Length: 209
Image (cartoon, rainbow, N blue to C red; front, side, top):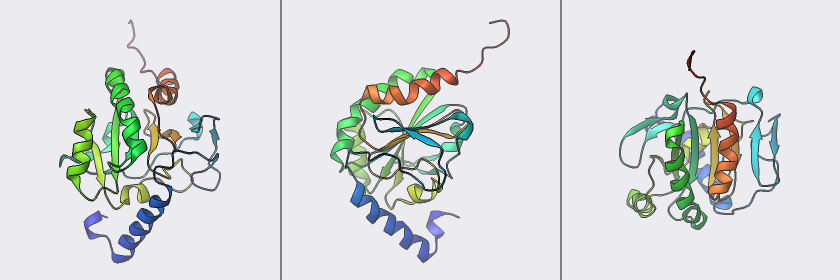
């Protein structure tokens, strides 16, 4: 179902999500186990980063749409790479604080098969979001999600889902959710999330190499 043809009830639900995100936006705090309900099988570290063992990970829903620069992007097409999803808004102070760290780590890990994708939420004006990206030299695309529809439908119940702005999700090479943070991150935090997945899932070398 395309977003543009969503029934009225669906659009109202997305509006409810946007209102709920407004309550949790930019809190910069993680209150322990959260994110889905049911048997989530994840472990929360003292640093506020939730992780899932490889055999217990689940895939997100469809995360696709138009980017801020008007292109089409489907996160599923990045399967085979580690994907870092960052939920942000240009109006969000903690998002501005972490942006330089995301730029730094994205540039450092590009050659290691790590792709970054932003999810720009609750920015009604693309110009402000684009100015944010230019200001911090953000080198990766962001899906434009002003009504929070990707956040509502992209992360099924029982998964490590984003519950505020900023939030960060890491997908493994199989496209499954491996880690989540519900707080602003610096470069050390980001590497703490990504490096174990890089180590465990390094692509196999060709025979004879």
